[in-house]
Image (cartoon, one colour):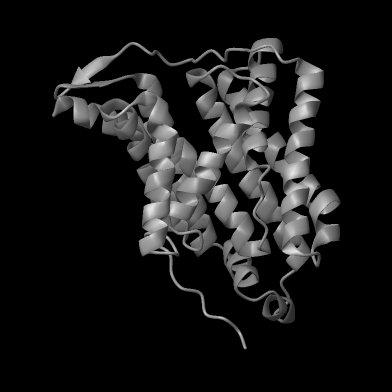
Length: 290
């Protein structure tokens, strides 16, 4: 039984990172109806920025973290203005292809500037395990879970309680009505893309000490998309819960079935749940306008 709970805790650590990426997917989609498949590359960019500031320039860890997140947010807002806003009225397929193309260009640019060699990002926290109630933890894993949950909660409060957040919510519900009450839709879109990109960048920085950083690490970001679909793509709390659930399912499948099958197991669970609940576990049916 201890092994089971240990695997679940490890899955929660993974799911907390997925939740940051998945939240970025959902936020951008709710406001703009664009599924940004460059989110994974934005996560990779966050890890690369942090590596550059911390290892190459010798900046303090928290300064490197903050600068990486801010740069990712700025870059996301710039992408929205240059690459996506001109395609606002384009077909959905065109927008999806544009996000895929941007992701590929980001990956290629990092490969040109940094090379394809792997890099490690040092952690300022100890990875030395300690035991509580028979379960093994590390300061690093606990800090990742804590920071990720705090970021998710802070954003949800911002989205629900602040004037800007309510403007974002209004824009996502009805763009024309938001314009009529004086909300700047273009500025809201830029802010949404900045926040979504910053969340992905934060996930990349938190993930960096756990894996080897490469230009291809952005492929992990697709797990945030899968988790958000699993929980409910039109529900922010549901998407976050789905990401945590995906991390736990992956780990349980990897330990109790086969480590090489954990991705397959996650997809099988996703298909099964969507067959029963097409809008995800916590999603809601969206009414269609006449």
